[in-house]
Length: 202
Image (cartoon, rainbow, N blue to C red; front, side, top):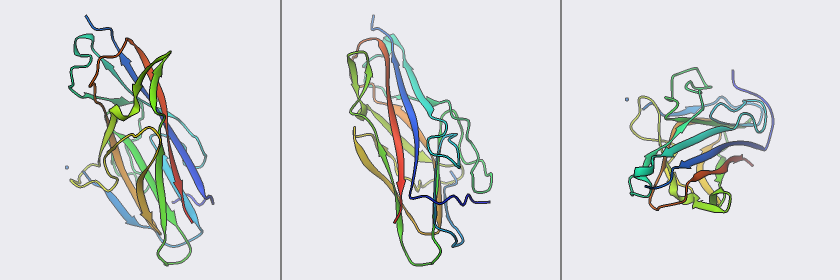
């Protein structure tokens, strides 16, 4: 059963952690939702499907000392355990490598309209006074059984950026796979920053 909570804004978040050591078949969903009471829904990772700011999942990587700044991208993992679709329980994602992202926009009529999902990240990940620009974190998008993602891949810009539009009476979900560019030597430390996913609708 689809959630029916009324809202104009749902927020979900995740925290990105980069720990750096000292140097010495995808099945994407674009499904039709039956028109009904105006509602929007956004789920990132485990979250909580009836509350703003549910669980905030972590995405992290530990870069080995010998590899710091060598230009080889480092795969990140998440502590999210959400694998199944909230639509029908289908095994959409494969945690911990993938983070579930799902949303829908419903309205009473069949008149075309659009909801928008944006993401907001800080300029930098920080560890004390040391920083890593947030644009060194990127993601690809997939889902079990489908070769073409419906939520696009991208790179954080350090600010607010567009992620995807969702048509009225539509359900959309994919899985994000995050990566750290590892393109510069940085001091040892645990660098953190929080990303907020925001959905708005007319």
